[in-house]
Length: 351
Ligand code: ATP
Ligand code: MG
Image 1 (tube, rainbow, N blue to C red):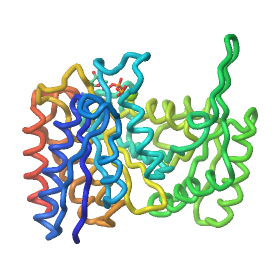
Image 2 (cartoon, protein in one colour; image 1 turned 180 degrees about the horizontal axis):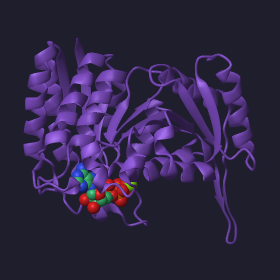
Image 3 (tube, protein in one colour; image 1 turned 45 degrees about the horizontal axis):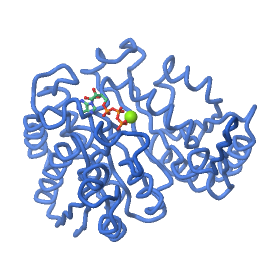
């Protein structure tokens, strides 16, 4: 197949990790006889420096026309002045809104070789395989904000339609997995959560083959640490999802390992590692490229419908996690390039 993929390297380690993922996508294209065309654009701090804007019109137009977008990371200390008129993160929020990507997917698995890096004990980490589905374009982050000298208000609003579309997504994804959905809310206190819960209950009736469980967000925060292997698909609203997915990410041992996909009604989605721009190691060639390479695998699966290719990349990564080489964040000495080379040779053996 032919696909047009926009690359947004961004700031910090972003260019290093996206370059590695593009090399992997090139190898996939060669092995499976596809033609991927890559188109690189500016976003974030580097875009502010070059154009004055965190998301230049040319970048946005290219993303809207693409089959998928792969992003590195945005931000860094040189752009973090809270009084600055524009900030790198605004570019990312604007891009998510413009692409209509309302569902943020974050898979979490704990590789047995890396379990020692996790704050949890080994036996609790066995068989951890969770897919978080976080609502990404509603709730308190997008509601009206007002401020007077002594009062601040963040409106938290959800419509039935907003809840429905992301919850349906979660149920459909559960059908391809272990058929268990955990919906997280705070229905004992919040009206938006009561709307959320009743919507989940109504949609659940359409999926009699999927088991549904409701958890309050406070107890879920605890359960993720005490019984992480119990969960399959976890669906929740924007703010709760932001917090729970970062909590869960700690279980994997390093931020550098985890991918994400942000998707909406359109086939085109936005794919990025969950880590930030890691300014402390930028430019040293030691960033772990695996989170971005796995994000590229999600791109193959969700935007291009290339399941076999996605699985081949994931298997190659699993091979490298098992046998090394490993970057410093996961206890090794290897460079970004050495890990990339190892993933490419493991992919050669798969394909
Ligand atoms: P942001 O504010 O952009 O979300 P953050 O504050 O969450 O960023 P990161 O930039 O993700 O922080 O970095 C947190 C720590 O994790 C840093 O010490 C960084 O070096 C490390 N880290 C992040 N990504 C990687 C990676 N790909 N490889 C190795 N280490 C990483
Ligand atoms: Mg962060």
